[in-house]
Image (cartoon, rainbow, N blue to C red; front, side):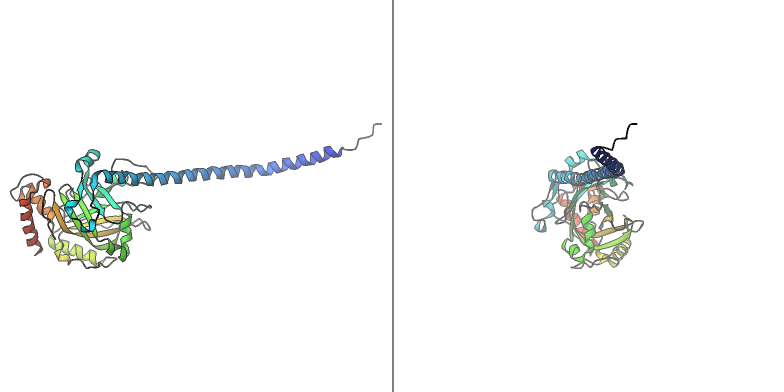
Length: 330
């Protein structure tokens, strides 16, 4: 009878090693899948962050290019006159016929064209000056826009301008920083340039207002209504202007610059400014302290016997408007 052979030690060891390897492979299998899935998620996340970063860079770069090609700003804005600012309106209209103005705030990076569509405050929330949009993914710059409830010529008593509060500090994000009194008082001057003429503004209040509030966008007001409107904004202000602005009863035209409170998107930070100087296009003398744009538009549209549009204000008209402005202030 054949006796059974004893097991070969090498084969036995090999078998044990093979079994352990197979067991380890089975154990590693699920973790390998998890690792590969995690790696795929990481790569996708990094790609998404890179894309978002690119949309922030490209969005601001596009506006920087528009500014460098179409806006002339004096090197020393503090000592500049309104005549030192100029915009190539024809070139801008060739890109976007909805352009109605330009907003520039020295020292904080606010330097953008302003667009306007009658009764439409939605389109430019997600369309840039050139008409681009990133859809629902990426940095959506939109465009700085004058409220659709305003006329497009900046002659209303209250002109409301909207802009996004971007995470990279661009568009109207700097206005959110005006809740800091030191920042607010260091940047009181705002310039709004238009085809009809250039404005120099001085801020007098920053309010935090619910997005559903309907008391801010009230374009046309009587002098008494406007005085009450301005006083309300002053009373609710988060900061105290230094130096103090003129009394509410002496302010005849207001600009409001509105942006989101990103901490609570249902609220808005609104910076209010009064018109302190206006230079009509083609004029040689500035007008001070009143709704001078409205007066210029009235004269140039025929209200004082002249002809032509707001761009056609002559030096003779400027003298008449100056007298009218002084009468209204006094």
